[in-house]
Length: 230
Image (cartoon, rainbow, N blue to C red):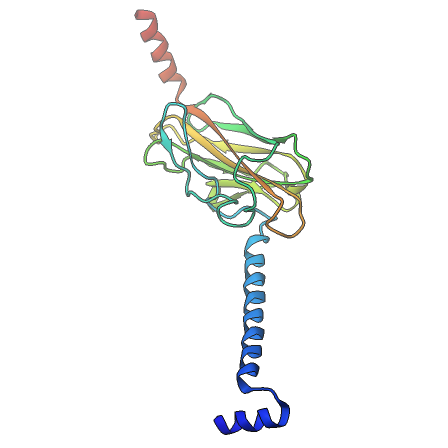
């Protein structure tokens, strides 16, 4: 190796060590490009629906620690990481009934307001207070092709077509009467306001929560009778 280095230096004036450094630099650049490509494929392939369990975590006004299926959000996962959750000027909202009966199918409106970008997305899940389990089932809304359900109905999210709007109609069916529900059930939702520039920068992530109580009409009547007696 020393003889080759001496010969190369005499003929070209370039040392083998210098060539080694150049090759190392090229290898490092190729490595960085590979990482960027892999990251891009991971981060920006979700226009057809959000990855599972990215609805964040929250605490109710009463101090109940209701944790969503995972602490991840589209911000923490790295898909859209420039800004912290809720730092955008837009508003992300859930419109849900306060109460429903077991097995009842209710309508949920997921909506953005006061955003400047054209592309939006969301994911929603429902949990009760019994070890923060996922309860109920989200249902596809007829011929609606801007939303879809995931994991057998445990989540609902946008479709690729559904990114071109600011609101979505979702249906959720409460657990059946024989299923014990630790009320309240809390809906966790994460919303994305994206500029569609193909990068993780310039996008805003929002979160929203709403509670609903699942109980039968018979139980409500018993409560009313008890109140009248008092």
